[in-house]
Amino acid sequence: GQQVMQIPQYQHVQEGEDFTTYCNSSTTLSNIQWYKQRPGGHPVFLIQLVKSGEVKKQKRLTFQFGEAKKNSSLHITATQTTDVGTYFCAVDNDMRFGAGTRLTVKP
Amino acid sequence: NAGVMQNPRHLVRRRGQEARLRCSPMKGHSHVYWYRQLPEEGLKFMVYLQKENIIDESGMPKERFSAEFPKEGPSILRIQQVVRGDSAAYFCASSPKGSGGIQYFGAGTRLSVL
Image: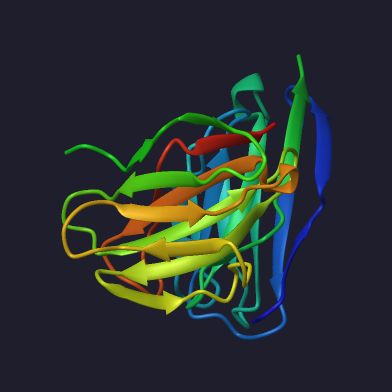
């Protein structure tokens, strides 16, 4: 199957700082999805990106799909403790998930 | 509209026993995915099923593991002769469509093998 790399694996920030996680594919994607999993919880769908260069926003979260449709990013502005969790990208036809980025926020 | 229902939430088995994990997809969803997650790790794809068909089982171990999604009733992930290494959280997700469909996850079954 295609390779999906997600970086960083871990990110620890001070509350109020920004956070970005990246998802990179070795092949061109038709779409990408982002999910969030709170500690002890289950993955919850956040957004789906389909178009080249697409940018979508949800409050403090900004999602971007690269022009070549091989990478994507999730950016959180001014993190809050409620943002704690693991953020996964999932790609395309076979719905493989990246390894996730585990975000911790220090109050 | 009930979400994806998984049961049991917690399952304890002794080595050598069988574990049966059930997943009822959301109403109207005919696509089911099973994932395995070890503590502090990502989601490992196991199998993708549609009603009465296994579409992709490339993530399933060749022995002891099987999955089904019958015409009636929940999808079942079956693990025979469990070993300690099978201890993990097993998540089921359902989708209204296959490729590119949004996945809705159940709360998971935490399997502990003694």
